[in-house]
Length: 370
Ligand SMILES: [Fe+2]
Image (cartoon, rainbow, N blue to C red; front, side, top):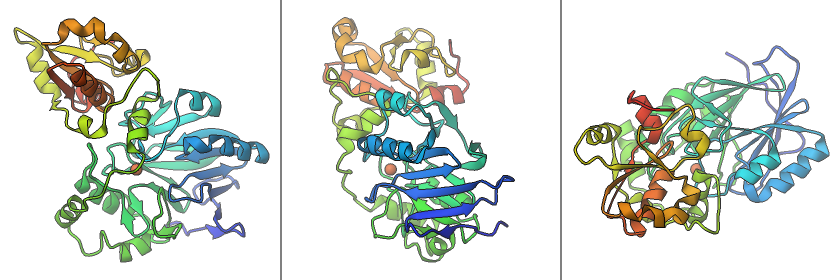
């Protein structure tokens, strides 16, 4: 087992480590940037840098910092699709010029590198290990660097990320925390994406001993607890969630209310495949970006392609389908839920959302075209 080599530097919120996971003598640093409840971290190894969970409004500040220190931004590491702040959009992505990294189940079309559990990334010769820890969201990951772990909203100081949004699963979170995080060495330093108690970091050992959400609770008890929290929606969810899921903001697209989207009916891939064989198959409407439509996940045969950012403009052309059964499709089932709610508002009476999107369609090995 690796000894924890992190030591607190004079800068207070900066930790320095001679990485025990690398054969090089490179020093890896983690620094917290925002000084708010919502955390962004800067990882540096030599001249190379990565930003973890950057907040869009602060991009110029981050860029100035990188410039002052002569750092090259290699990666943007997102721990999950956030609902409480704006992430990158196309313009921000171009400005940063770095590889956007997210779990493969991320709904965003702007991800350059999809990762999965156990994948290794490198920064200046240092290794960063991806741990898939679904629960808060299906695409939640933690990033393990030397003797520390960036836990996103999976594990917080004395807490855990909420599990009451669509796609969240308290049982999965319990399993992820116990099987992927609490199995790390006790002295592993934990850097969470949020801090509500004025305490910046913790350790795996301390959370195992004291985290009130987990200590002495069975999986079933945890699920009951998380289902009874009754938390209000985050303040910025209406401004952030659908923008982050779709990767754009536009004057022409008016995103529906989050509560309306959550109410859209979901249909399974198998059900859609069966209905396709029937006498009156549903209209399949794929709302992904053009490169995704012909990309690795392919599309369902016969699907009509109308990207989400032009859907509202094209509604008049779709008027002939108003009375028809419609199934909306995207990558992970998030953007299609937004599109389904837009169609419903426009008077489409029979709209359903393909649950899990093309990821789930492919996982069931149903046929696709490219
Ligand atoms: Fe979150």
